[in-house]
Each structure stands twice: as C-alpha cells, then as structure tokens.
Length: 560
Image (cartoon, rainbow, N blue to C red; front, top):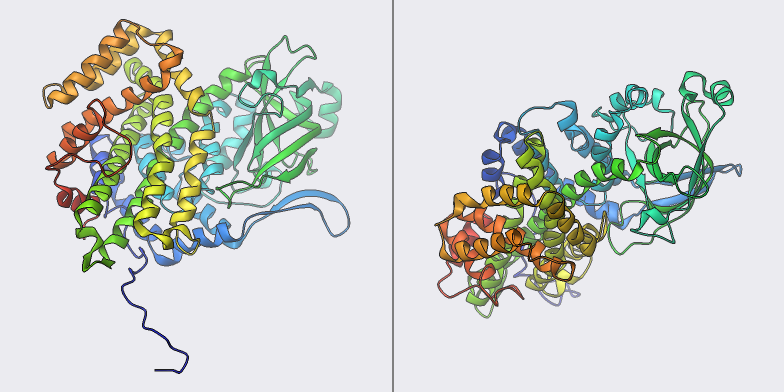
C-alpha cells in the first residue's frame, strides 16, 4: 500500500450508465404500444441505447457545469447580443433536433406520431432538461406559423429540418431553425393583458425598400420582455399591443433574430437569468428598440394564438416531468441495489423497498398519463378526445409537475449525502423539477384552466371523462367509489375556484388509476389504488399498504 493510502474504497454503487433507457422501461414500452405509437419502438430502442451511454449522460453534466455566457459586444465594440454555449450544449441540441423531437409529428404526420414523440421526449427528459426548452417552443410554434402562408413558406422548411444549425444568419440562409417565446413583462407576469409593449405597422413603401417582398406586413415593436426564453433562437413569438390604449387587444408577432437584409434585429439582451435550475439553457431579459416583427394571426387575437401554443408546451411539461421522475427513480434504485447498509443491500430492506416502490408507482403512473394525454393530441379531430385533452392538459401539468420536487427530494434521500452534491445527477434533477410547475402557467393558473375547460362545455367534457374512466369500472371497488364521486361532483357542478386544486388532483388520479387497473400488473395497480384513492392516503412517499408486493414492483421498474 502506498504511504499516502489510508483506506480502500468499497461498497460504492457504480454510476447508472451504459443502460438502454427504453428497453429497461417496461411501462414506457407498453404505453407506447397501447396508445398507438408502437411502430416507433425500434427507433426508440436505438435512441435509448444512445442516450443511456456514459459519454452521452456526461454531456448533461458538462452543459450544466458550463452554463451559457452573454456576449453583448464584439471585440470592436459592436453590439451583438450573442450567447456562447459549451460544446456539450450543442451536442445535446444536435441529438434532439436530429431525432426530430422538435417537429417530427408535423414533418411526418401519421397515426400515433404525437405518442411516439412523447415517448422520445420522455427519454430525452432523462438526459438533460435545459435543452428541452427550445425544442418544446419550436414544436409548439408550428400550428400557429403554418396558418400564415407567407411566414410558413420561409420558416417551416427550416423548422421541420433535422439539421441543427446554430449560426446567426437570415433564415433563408439556414439549414435549420429554432423558435423561442417572449410573453411576460415586469408589471404583469402571468397577466399578459397588462403588457405594455406596443407595435405599429411599418409604412409599406419603407418596408419594401428595406426588405423587398419580405417586408410585406412588417411591424415595428418597442417595449420589453421580462422572460425571453432561449435568446439564441432564430426567432421569437411575442405579444404586443397594437394601439396606445390597448383597446385593440394583444397581437402575436414573429421577431427574427437576424432580419432578411442580414442586419441584427433591435432586440437588446439586458442579461441572462440566474436560475435555480435549467442552468444549461439561456433565459433572458430583453428590450425592443424598434425591433421588426411580422404578425401571426389576426390583430387583437394574440392570446388565442398563444393559447394554442400553450397547450403543446404544457403537454411537454407533463412529459418532461415524467422523464425526470424516471431518471431520478433509476439512479436511486440502481444505487440501492449496489449499496449495503447494516449487513444487507439497501434495496432488500423493507422500509427502503416501501419508499422505492412508492416512487416506482408514481413514475409509472406519470408515464401512463403522459402518453395517454399525447394520444388526445393525436386524435384532436375527434371532439371527445379534444375535450378530454383540453381538460387533462392543465390538470396533468398541475398534479404531475407538483409531485416532482417531492419525488426528487425522496430520490436524493435514498442516495444520502452523495445525492445532495453536484458530483452526481440527483442534485441537478432536483433543481430541474420546479420549472415545469412554474413555466407556461403556475399551479393556480392550471387549476383555474381546468375550471374553464369544464365551464365551456360541461356536459360534453363530463361525458368525455366518463368514457375514459368507464372501462376500468368494476375492476376495483376503491376506484369505483373514487371515480363515481368525482363524476357526481362534476355532474352537479360542485366545483369552485377555492377547491380547484383538489379537483385537478382527483381528475388526474382517477385517470392514472384507471389506466393502471386496466393495463399494469396487479401488484402495481392494487398498490396505486390503495395508496392514492382512499381518504387520508398520500403525503410522504413510503406509506404503501401492508401486503404490497414491493419486490415485484421494483423488478418491473428497473429489470436487473
């Protein structure tokens, strides 16, 4: 032994790496098949293999340890407002764009395309979450942009491309393009109707003189945005008033970073946000000093335009959280199987099994719900599925994202002190959880949106939810009582703003329980029903009922 050696390092679990993230997840594989995306299983297996490699997983560490840096001026003193990223960020973005996570359902529409993309996005959620932000915004922008023929002709071929091209160039010279968003302002936050940023149309002759045919419909925009996500994106969708009094209502505009004539748009990045998590991604504060934008949708109809985008970004919040849950579970369970305490492996100790199995139930239920919700988007032409999706999207974003931080804390506790330090992934995953609750509408906003969904078409929405729950009727008395009480309360409209959080939770738990009772093994379904559907259930993880087959649940969660 070397004179400086004091001890041998042993009883340490190896890192969770070199694992196929798709094939090690039976719940995801089954949900993909039953929701209509089974045709993508081969591609997802190949992706899962690539994402689970140690060198790929390390890209997440590098991108977060080396966050983006704002460069406002070049060496000659010219204002450039560029954001510099570590090579790991660009590698992650190339992976996501190359796989089509930003646009595949629009570029290659087919039955189950949204479900397949949801499974793919859930796999990426286990890798790195900051890079998912620009991917989500680009994905959500397509339905709005394709309604504008002139903009669509220029932008959509680049958005739908699988070629990641980070160069700052006019879009016509790009191989691929990404879209960001800027909605909120200092004085309003969620209340975007309080926005003061204003837009006025450019004089047509001047616009044509500067931009040629591309100048048609150009506007000049002055104001600011307090949260301007991914300032390195090729364009951003923003909201602005179209008259000084604001009486015309907010309109939506597409603001390119580089204008068609090659000049930089007058978007001044004031600073990058110093965020709790999501540190690999650049979020910024900006001012518009006469920035040039093009109208998307009708004047005064900006909020409906953005709401259509919001439904897709909120879907991704649900899927993304399910992905982070899955990652945290895998790291915790893998550690418990490789670490001995008090004479036996952690994963064999009854109380630890209770905690780990409870986390596994939460993760599987989130996965099942996320892919079922994605099927609503696949089948949006069906009025019942559209109504169900309209209800479950805000409910799911509220409840599943709300469960995230507690889930992350419990997973860290399984690992102990090593889980709390930044050498491993769990501290980073824990810091990622809250953003999905906050971004695109916080919990209260989502619960109020649940009430709006019910209020707009109460009978039809009730019928859509009842049809979703009906196939599980009779499989479990606890479910029958829980779902029956929920449907009775909705039918009698015994819902109000004060109790909206409880209502959203009940809706999601009913759908999750119905899915698990119908499709999951009995050990999973029964434990979920016994721990989530009874009065007084819930609270801390690790309170599963007596008789729960934890060993079977954990064997399913991560096959050895």
